[in-house]
Amino acid sequence: MTRADELFKANIEQIMTEGVFSQQARPKYKDGRVANSKYLTGVFATYDLSKGDFPITTLRPIPIKSAIKEIFWIYQDQSNDLSILNDKYGVKYWNDWEVGQTGTIGLRYGAIVKKHDIIGKLLKQLEENPWNRRNVISLWDYEAFDSSEGLLPCAFQTMFDVRQVGEQIYLDATLTQRSNDMLVAHHINAMQYVALQMMIAKHFGWQVGKFFYFVNNLHIYDNQFEQAQELLRRQPSACQPRLVLNVPDKTDFFAIKPEDFELVDYDPIKPQLSFDLAI
Image (cartoon, rainbow, N blue to C red; front, side):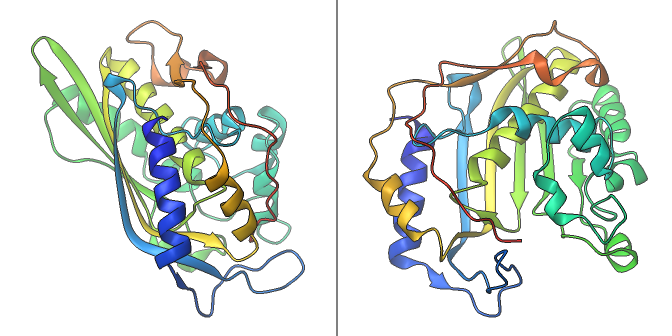
């Protein structure tokens, strides 16, 4: 059992037995019903990527290709334009969050990265002083929220720190998420931001170190309880998945492509489970 599987099962069990029910929830199912959930607050996990830990479950298949493409849309294209996500990357699931007939998700995610030149500033200050303690990506922008409708960012803050052990330099990352759908999005979001961590590390020729993951509200929706029990019954695969970025050290951040990533030794348990998403 991988560390990700162990934590996944423990979190599902704890939510189902100790979680409390949401009240006046914002999300709705596509049929209009309120999407209530059972949830825990303040859930934290550590993965040591340098020792082979990787935050992806083997209990069901996780769609890694589309998830990584979403990271490129946000941090390379720095866009909120759904046509780019649809046409360039073939990813459609964000279409449910289109704002009106704008063809965008509002001033969110990539639009905030571009507005503040977040990646440019982050790479510049890491180059000038890798040991600084101000390497923060924040997508929480009240001005943008007031001026545009749209889903508020869930994975809204990422922090990076450099650590040297002997001759080796490691890049550690911390992802903070205000809200997370445990069964659908948990390992998608974690894996995405490990990919971003790898891209930044590769830009400088560093190794990836530790990945810290904090979720403020970790929940299972009330139409997913049967799937939760099925996941608890499943025995994990014997595989040991890891993500590989197949480009040379010091490849420019903006020159990396989604197809440069490869998930190796990943043989998840099937069949895939279906989930009706809350919008």
